[in-house]
Length: 173
Image (tube, rainbow, N blue to C red; front, side, top):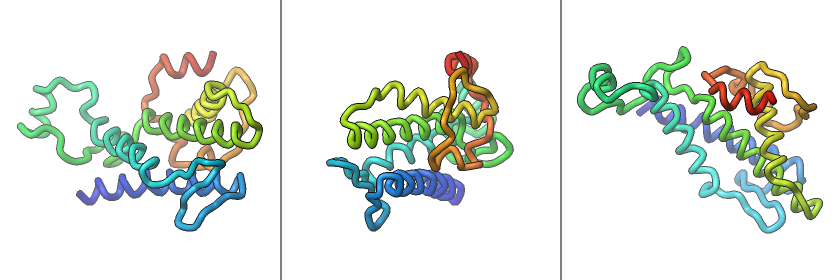
């Protein structure tokens, strides 16, 4: 339970700071960490699904490719019920959560861009955000990528967590 709380707290802190960073960029920081951009107000109900994804990712990673018999042999008849070691720590997020955070950043950036300029190509904003993630995995992108924003500066996300070759190949192309 303690590891679960720590993982939830870490993901919450990353996402909370991301919202605050975007709020500072557009000059619309609200008390209590909320974010107001145009008619959109990000509250906890926007962030909790990201928390759940990160916690589920950290919980499931140690058993992701195991058959039930191997899970049962390692964790007992109840299966995995708490965080287990992965990537040299307990409760580590994977590349899936890293990419989810950068995708969310792309969505936030596209909303800010659309609100301030009146138009934005959302797939391009998400693609660019995922190219920033690619940089955190020590790969170069085929096109110039800005390194601005709060998320790319989070050194904890500069850890390779077994990214898939399909994702890497598509982003490097």
